[in-house]
Amino acid sequence: MRQLLLSILLLPFCLLGNAETNEKKATLPLRELQQQFVDLKFGMFIHFNMGTYMEEDWADPDAPLSLFNPTRLDCNQWAQAAKSAKMRYGCLTTKHHNGFCLWDTKTTDYNAVKAPLHRDVVREYVDAFHKAGLKVFLYYSILDMHHGIRPGCITEADVQMIKTQLTELFTNYGEITAVIIDGWDAPWSRISYDEVPFAEMYRLIKSLQPNCLVMDLNAAKYPTEALFYTDIKSYEQNAGQHISKETNKLPALSCLPINSSWFWKESFPTSPVKSPSLIVDENINPMNRIDCNFILNVSPNREGLIDDNTLTALRQIGKLWDDKAVQVPFLPPYDAPLIARNLSKFQTCYSSWSHDMWIMDFANDDDFTTSWTSNEQVEKPWYVVDLKRTHAFNTIVITDLKNSFDTYTLFYEKAGEWIPIPQQAQKGSVKIHRFDRTWGEKIKIEIVRSSVSPSITEFAVYDEER
Image (cartoon, rainbow, N blue to C red; front, side, top):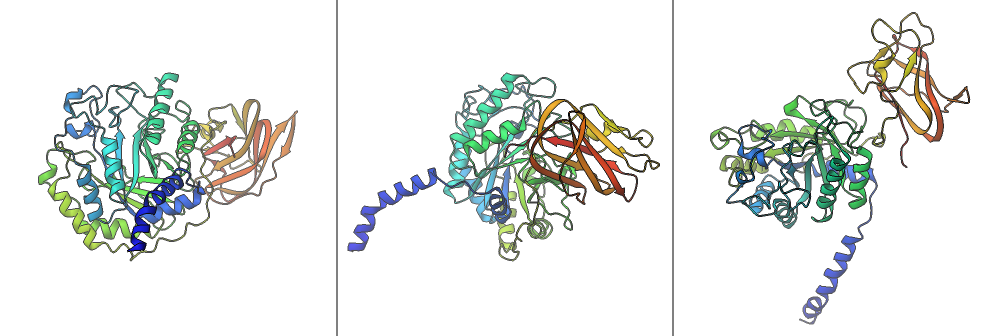
């Protein structure tokens, strides 16, 4: 009895101590966070937004606020559904491409609190999932058609609005384990990492929540061998992006909807969902074996509830999946993410004689489907990019998707003289060279030996913050 009374008396102080510990939570190394991410194995993507009220996933950016009115919204139901499938986290679409915000943002009246619902959906989701012992992810779209944040139209005020919205999301809702960003530097969105500066947004998120992983859904553009502008390599199966079960060496995420599309449709309650055995045997287990976390999308209906057929499937997944059957392996060696601005993109460049139409400009056009290719008659091919002025740089990345060469030398020009950059040549399709910061106006690669006519898909130069 004395021990019980003592425990009760000390409880407030223990809780206070835990709160203080949480506030001062140590910043973990990125690699440890990435390992923790793949160890989560399986989670719930929740597409719920203005698209829920339309028969197309890309909602009308001018849809009236009155349309968003989920009269039975219950985020606790979502959390319990996730637990029934043995999921470890959720990820909610806080803002999709039409620009409607599910939280109490000060940046726009186009949000759920101003709609007939008059409730902060992000708050209710975060509270429900944390209460259920689940990790919390957020989804956020850079592309915002309602507010005109689209390629070629972006102003400094738009960039500031994005910063303010991210600050709200990562300041007001407790611990966020990861954010999935969409609509940014994808072939279909075309908003570049220069128009909305990636490094600034990345550092902002990390300054607010250092242990939050930043994922950008850009797999359609970038090679699978390196982490270009993301902490986690992502694959959207519906868009034809499939992870290699033989060659993947990066922390990864693969996503798939349990229904035929991402947002709820009128046919969903009576249409078959994907087979629970397919989810377990062809997605969760094989992906977990190769350091890939699997996220299954569910679509709450217009009342704000998950349909019965989906709930049944999730329970069946939980029965079929033995979450201890597959041991996620330790992540293999790989390079840190590239997040800085590419200084060589679209800059003037020169080269030795090219093969046919594949001239030097294809090697820094920010397009991984084109390449500069050397003419086969050139014995010692070379390529130069001109930064136009003396610039600091400390990273060079050579993407050679044809694996056409592995013996080469790098140089930079200073006062008219070519000075070698002391780097060991690398094999592989993405060759990442990091070194002490130096200053130069031009950077050059000389290819010494190649198996076929040398080809450079992209030659990128960065000045990284370290």
